Image 1 (cartoon, rainbow, N blue to C red):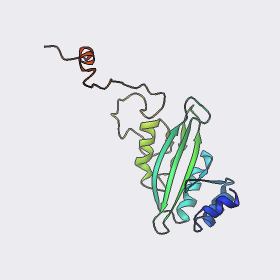
Image 2 (tube, one colour):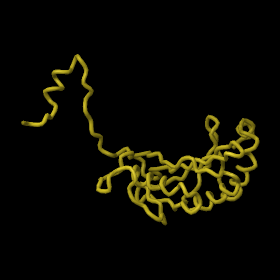
Image 3 (tube, rainbow, N blue to C red):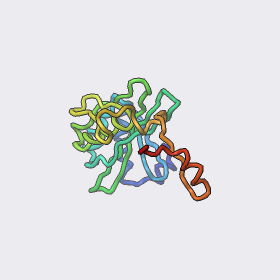
Length: 177
């Protein structure tokens, strides 16, 4: 990160980022006031432990971005941390390949990661290795696929307006009596 970018950043965040950059050999990036670091997936558990030790007591979000049709990396798993006491936010991004998408669990570091990792599995199909209870949380247990993946088939129904009401009404499947 350049000097100009660091000058725009919150002064309280700079020493924290320097510790993380030194410990994990990564660099921070800032975009519209949000600071994030790209961490290799094998180091995410250690990075989360370090982040918690640096005063970020809340894992405020855990989600993913699907870059399909790219396969390497296909996903970025995004961890957002908040320090309520210091009024700071930081993000960690973990690139994950499309084949066998997995990340190590961090539920032993942040207890609320338990449900968030289940949601990550349910919606994106990214498994949290070592998770104590990895099963669907939002979709039914017998559901096939992961709805937030970009290659998930969309169910589509054309919106019905006054100008196309009759045309669409003829195509709608109504129950037979």
